[in-house]
Picture: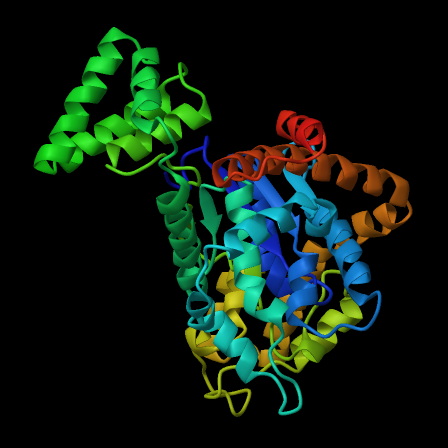
Length: 417
């Protein structure tokens, strides 16, 4: 599975710990607007995660979450194409988190770099909370509950994606071999049809007896392409192929992308300090004030000193927001000392403002349509709930916790009590 596979389900999210900045737009949201048309995309506003890892004042998380929703829509996230939702509006996610916490060793959480960084950042009077320890697992539960196959994230998140895969493997190992596993696998092979079933058996034998990785990939490809099996049957035959139990939970793949990283679930990018950051709703004057305070090439002490754009901290912003013609003008002017840093910054301000103006205008319009936006988020949450309910039902079934109101087992329990 890869990010270029348009059938792959993509899961990404942002924690509402403040107002969205130009850094968020550059690294995440702009890519979301592209990816939504090429994947089965789920984008979540991770408000539970924000509560777990930060000490916000009352109502701050709600305010930041709602502002993030507005900004995502203003930037071009299309709720008719992608599923955009607020994490806490899907209560089944916390159930999945609870189930996965029963198989996740505490030491796995303590070794994660993200957790160690959070603990290191706490003051002497504040210790790590239970929620803070469990926040990475909550994030993993979101991905696994939504059946995420591709997770766009920066390199600093590689350890967390591997942790998510480890949790899935551990759960599958413990609960994947249900009673009659082999018999059900054989019935699933029969559903493939005579030719496909024969090929699957041949490749199964070649892989398990001879370690033929090419045979493994062929068998996996056959299962991915067939329309004769449902998801559970496909996962069962994948587990059968691997020599273990049924793969109840899939293992998501980390995708960093070919250009700028998507920092995805735990983005912390800022242009400088938070006070100097350019926010998505910053006006031209605020953009100008922030850019003027940014450092430039240290070689340009005087206006007459030539510089090197590649050594200038502002250049990455030019590469992202300035059209090629003006970018070439700025680069040549810097090297030849024919323009000053303020001239270069003025050009950058113009193009950043040109990018943000339509976003600000759409956000202002959406602020006046809270009913419409709330309906969009309700519909997004319901679509996410449908997906997560299927996962939760499967997890409850394999661990043997099916006695809940409305289920046949619950009716039987009432009759015998």
